[in-house]
Image (cartoon, rainbow, N blue to C red):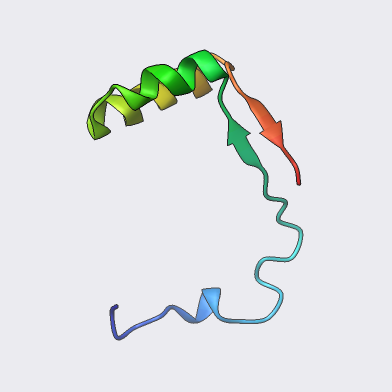
Length: 59
């Protein structure tokens, strides 16, 4: 851990209004990801996101 934490991320309310969701990929894509190395998996996920092949989980 570094010795400097920017003040901008430690003040109360900095995350106000931010909504977070999880990206969920389809089962066939998850199976394909299991067989890829880390770099290829990252590239494949980026491709899926760019093409809109995912759903959002708001829970």
